[in-house]
Amino acid sequence: MLHERIPDLSKFVEPDRVRKEVYTDAQIFELEMERIHERVWIYCGHESQVPRAGDYYTVQIGRQPMLMVRGQDGTVSVLYNRCPHRGAMMCGDRYGNTGEFFRCSYHAWTFHHDGTLRNIPMMESGYAGTRWGRDNPDCRMRPAARTQSYRGFVFASLAEDGPTLQEFLGKSRIAFDDMCDRAPAGEVEIVPNCFRVIQNSNWKIFLENQLDALHPSVTHQSTGRAARNVELAIEKKTGKAPLSYHMLSAFATVTIDKWDGFQTLNYPNGHCILTGYMGLRPKDPDTLEYERVMEKAYGKERTEQILGVNIHHVLIYPGLSVQSPLQQLRAVRPLGVDRTLTEIWHFRLKGAPEPIYRRALAYYNLVNSPATMINADDLENFWKCHQGLSSEGGEWVSFHRHFGRDIDKGNMVETAPDMGTSEAPMRNQMKAWAQFMAAER
Ligand code: FES
Ligand SMILES: [Fe+2]
Image (cartoon, rainbow, N blue to C red):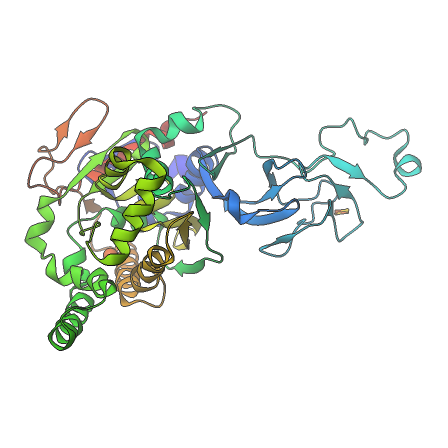
């Protein structure tokens, strides 16, 4: 039992370092699923993934197989993907349309899109006088305890109580506001389907990497340099290389010393924001046309406000990484202590000119997809970290960089000027982890 082996888990997390078992112990992983992923708000998907009644998408929340489904009245529900009869999984496909109702493939029990019972074959004769009937609350597909969406992004919590979605997200809501506001129509649309990558490493290693400002110019240096060489060659020939080269060459041109110039903002519940980084407002003809469309939709002043939002990356603990100015989203689904699924999505800004979508697609393919060296560079580090942490070569993981120098503003911690490579985001995530893990109920 975990408690017998590790009587006081809180001793495993210190403000500036964390025990390696936090990443490698299978029983700690089970407790994380119970106390974090199966309790807090977890991202299920975007409403535009299920546009028509009966459309569904399956999703893993902690250890629970769930599905997100659109009902006849337009409501999106999140249900356990399980038949209440003998427990068969209701939808075996990853996504699809279930028609006017769910029909279990085993004994043909049927359910409405909100999970309530529709019919059971020969129900009156088969169940008369038994405990099983329409008014038995177990006689339905069980819904997630709570489902809420924010600007089209659907979340579910498997706990009856706790903060509302908006309270939980706090300032990290800017990820969705920034993404949607950049659309002339004020909303985004998912681009099906996502890439799925299984990483042979603990889920926290991925999250810690997202706002790790020290690693890009090291880990991705060779990829960035190769892109920079090609970019220079094209510039020499034609005077101007396509913007997409910059997405990769920035990993070489933004050298390690420059990363201290950015800043991270660290909020309660483990959420963090990275400001700055790439030039996100180039002056090419496509961008100028987009700005014209935005001004038509919002007016000059509001357009300036929207396009002036200076964030590059928002990490929403414990499972979401959003790059709102480039409409990218990665959802993290822990599968086991050393196995993690990431779903890599991108979105279309409704009402924006096509080249702006092409830019998001280029970033998706060049930086976030499994086809790019950037992703491969990171994956190798994640695997190496998990291997090293599984060894007897040391007990602790170090988060000491700029420890004690961050600026604590009460409800947020920001990195001090010229200390953007502070490991504040990792310390912040582990602080939230320890708080969630300590809450027995
Ligand atoms: S298990 Fe679903 S109808 Fe029997
Ligand atoms: Fe990286």
